[in-house]
Length: 155
Length: 117
Image (cartoon, rainbow over all chains, first blue to last red; front, top):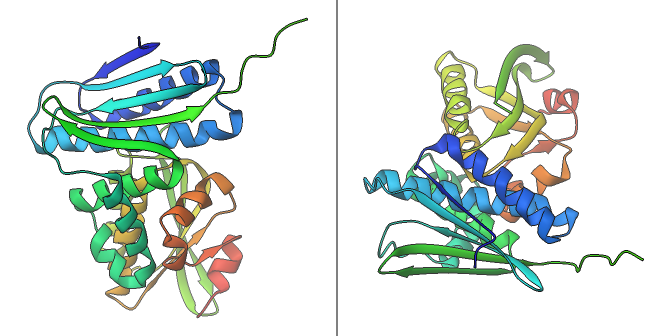
């Protein structure tokens, strides 16, 4: 069962809220302080991508973020309502290697939604070791998880 | 924290430079404001930009996209876009996306303004 579940209308201004909530819950769950910045960035990227997909597909349903504290890890699932987006962590890797082409990478990243979408996935795959991008009948889901350190037992 | 932007002109050995000081969070919500600022500067004839990111608390891929868009615009006029950043959390995002190979990144505004290559 989810520790915290968040649904927000697909507006860019709410992505910050999702970042703050995710970081707060991750901290409580025992995710290392040094990794919290990564959690914040990764969940922001996933939510930005979902907001972009909802807006470009005219989906009025909210973006869903599920934060789950498990025994040894903390996971975040960001769900969009778009079926068959064809996204994938592999695409993110391609975007990352495109960045080494100097000026030509400008074409890839220039303002268009698709380029930003790919760069978002590139950042997520670069940041998070355990990441899974799936697309089902209910839409796409980016699932990320981080190890947690067990709480220190008080004497 | 919202995005804050301010610009000033500085003379360097290579000519005039426009320093854009950015503060706060650059994300999917605030990045359009930065894009507008960069587009406006280029339209007004400022082709050599130094973006000072020392006051930036958060940067995501939308922000990276805006910076790359700015770089593309100034290059169309044989200009330059240099970044000033010392924050590890921000530099990490440039490294992950390998944009460190695309942007000259300096440790101080003075160094960026003085750069001519």
